[in-house]
Image 1 (cartoon, rainbow, N blue to C red):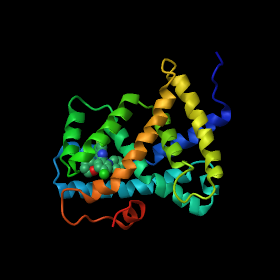
Image 2: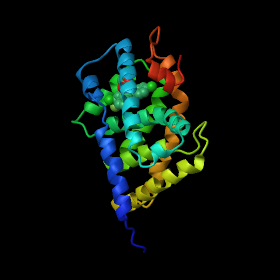
Image 3: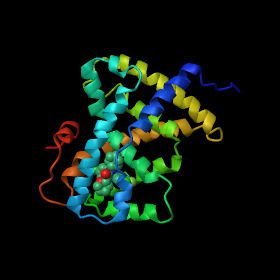
Image 4: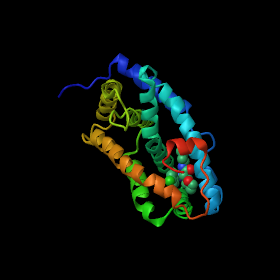
Length: 233
Ligand SMILES: O=C(NC1CCCCC1)[C@H]([C@@H]1CCCCO1)n1c(-c2ccc(Cl)cc2)nc2cc(F)c(Cl)cc21
């Protein structure tokens, strides 16, 4: 049985990505806000657009710290950010939802989100994803690497030099694979399950614009940054 070993370079790569991920947290805790009180549909929509806007800014800062990203062709940097921003937002929402909370808090959180104004039809796919992320009990290293791997997806629309993106994504996949083997020796399929979540994330991509425009309220206002990043307005 070959001994899996993380090399010095891979340790260094992981350290850079995890530190960048932890440095760029979402400012105020949206879960705490939602647990404190029940907001109206308009207030929930405003909360989401504010949180999502600040998350995009955080995502850009995180991405700039991914080794090699700033050496990519500039149009490709934009294409990768635009292509992954919604997935990163759902991935972060799933991680927030899956955090260990005092008894009953997750149920309150789920209830508040179900009543926040999102159309019924999107609840099942969204919460199925949140629960499948929760079942993985991901470590922060795995969360950071998975987010970096999602950003460095070579086949996003409009990416010209896909090979250059693959050359950045592969080392991340290698170190994540080794980390999964070392941290979850009883679960040989754990790495494959993690990557399977990225496939599930892409399906949420299809829904996100409709989730927003079908929010139970009139006159949906988006920030200019969200209009850029999300296919709305
Ligand atoms: O603000 C949210 N998420 C931010 C986004 C940036 C990163 C941090 C988390 C939303 C809030 C939920 C209440 C209604 C207003 O939206 N949200 C979504 C969500 C995301 C996309 C759509 Cl279209 C619909 C709902 N899922 C969440 C799961 C959670 F656990 C928590 Cl705490 C909040 C969550």
